[in-house]
Length: 85
Image (cartoon, rainbow, N blue to C red; front, side, top):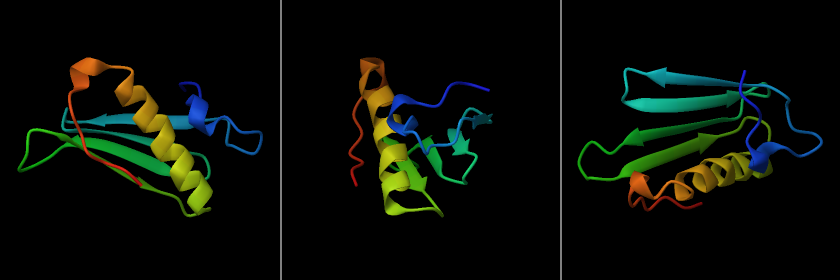
């Protein structure tokens, strides 16, 4: 399994994530505690949509968003997206 993204590497964070690419339409990352992030193309705009959820806490949800956001912003070829929390 890939390493836990830096935004999720807190001492209490799970040590494993699962990464799945589905039909080249979206990528989903799921941690052991059930926190997940999804990146997909918008169906009606030329931009990306980022969705995150956590059954554990708002903090974990925010950490997942930060981890995904950090990766996307390191890659300018991704282009614009307007997702925030």
